[in-house]
Amino acid sequence: DAGVIQSPRHEVTEMGQEVTLRCKPISGHDYLFWYRQTMMRGLELLIYFNNNVPIDDSGMPEDRFSAKMPNASFSTLKIQPSEPRDSAVYFCASSFRGTSGKNIQYFGAGTRLSVL
Amino acid sequence: GNSVTQMEGPVTLSEEAFLTINCTYTATGYPSLFWYVQYPGEGLQLLLKATKADDKGSNKGFEATYRKETTSFHLEKGSVQVSDSAVYFCALSSNTGNQFYFGTGTSLTVIP
Image (cartoon, rainbow over all chains, first blue to last red; front, side, top):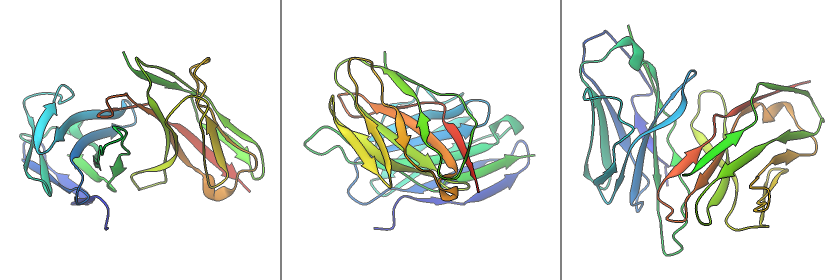
């Protein structure tokens, strides 16, 4: 398997613009997670899905952020409008819970977002 | 609630030195414990895991033992290499297995 695939790897945009980050999870995985990583705040969970349904979005910073998972093989994280403080590396991860109830998260390479 | 506390960095060691990165946790129930590693410009990769008390996870010369009595999962390596330079994250997964709780990460630099 190719692993979790994120695109783009780098995104530079201007304040006020809409940004869409994309993620393709590992085939067969039933959980998908979006994280944000900054030097100041470390790794933060933004939202996660189970079987394409959002389960916990309490980490989403504000209404400017939205995430969707229209099918099992694709998810987006959108920021509209973007602000300089959104600059960070955004990671997508997926996992398969299985019968053991214990799962391992597999991370994508991340999207480095710079908002000017 | 669930949380992970790990040793503050950065840590700088000479090649072949002994490494310990401390990690303690707070959890309800019986969590699984993990160490992830992040190399520059990459995502997090699973390094090792342990799913129950007294289990020892090991990989690439790294080891960590799940100690329920001290709620700890310290990462150790007997002889580090320059290629081990990375950020290391301790994490736990609750017994429902859905969500991970990550520590703040510890940056390790190994110098020749």
